[in-house]
Length: 286
Image (tube, rainbow, N blue to C red; front, top):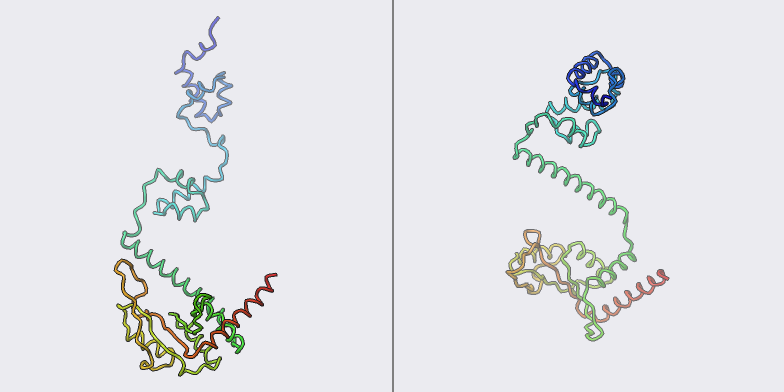
């Protein structure tokens, strides 16, 4: 009895018949049935290199996208641009066009850096505008400041930034140090509200020795409406060569120290005002 594989003995003759049937437009199933080839591996070898007829191909929705992706790649588009244009995944784009030549860069490295810097500048400009919009809107929300609101603001400001007596060291002296010009202006307006005359105020600049001491004195004198001659000798901070200072340049003016003469009573009142604020705040936490 002949072995079942004997029917494949004339493989080349069988392949010629299979190829002829394939080119005539028959499907794999039709060729298998016509030649009685039940082994898929044998059938694959018989039809190797022969494309299936068009009528047997299943429609593929991505065929059009693939062709468009290849067109764009040939036009010099990058993977990112093709992905964004067609809404495809990067892996699909890579699979479709990886056999095509890589497009030449549109820009030199110098041009690319310039474009990046310009883009960053636009981004920072937009961010600055947004911050400005927020700040201006918030400033308008404050509206007119009543005397009581200024009073409470000043008490909180002093207790946060002013000097305070300790239980073990009762100094009871009003002194305030800050580098923020806005804070200084609010503090001076608060002292005016309390009726503290300007002749009781002492001014002194606290600044690094390497800075423009005279320029800083003029700056704080103008801001506080005081003559430079009314300022005490500045306190200079020694420069530490091991540290890298960032508070340098024309906008650095150090700190302004403002003291109030004969201020023991005023200090105790400030401490009492602050305790009153804390007492009422505690009731809101219960």
